[in-house]
Length: 322
Image (cartoon, rainbow, N blue to C red; front, side, top):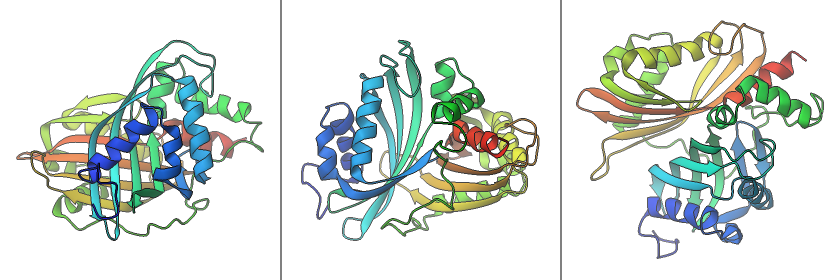
């Protein structure tokens, strides 16, 4: 780990360790050390430039969810300490809605949801980030439907002319990381599965997935086996049947005591032209920022974790029709 604090034994330990320091140990000021001052953080909701914005958002989140805990389920990574490393960090978060904030008046509701954060780090500092939080799971547990939450968000932020615009390739800002991951066979395998699904070849699911596969999807939805995988992916693709699917970053890894696994960050860009997971077609231009982690076993893909922000998709649909 050349260039990194020696207290971290490897890159996953660094990523999991600084996350705990910042959020649970309340060392928010350590963001000055661990994050570059001009970091670009992209989420489905927006693009934020600068560490001061990250610090402000962190404090606002902790004011609303003071007991927020972040359990690192996996760190799938590529690169080297000398050239920079990209981590795809999957977290399972618990929190209590104990303070008022962007999710409304404090309700005391306990929450569980997942996050996937892709971070580029070099010389003990993160300087580029892509962050996807399961907003659909959060708002459902608080009593909202994602569409209704998006509508309320538009109004709260000042209406369609003033509200924050969700992330799209047109609003992206280039950061220092320009890598695409690695060419490990497990990343290649997952990329092939996703490309076939997005090419309407749903037969790949019974071919490539273990029949007992465990599935985790947006909205905190858990699934089992081929039928649930088909239902999720069909609903998404049917909503945007002609949208362009891109694989933006791809990692495969094999590590001791771990199954072969892969992490892919992907995008889906185009019109809401079909009936599917997002209701009646509206013709709205939409970008979906998505991420998928997968674990493989002797009978195929055995665990899949896919995330995107349903509220950001609905916000784009609603804004296009206002």
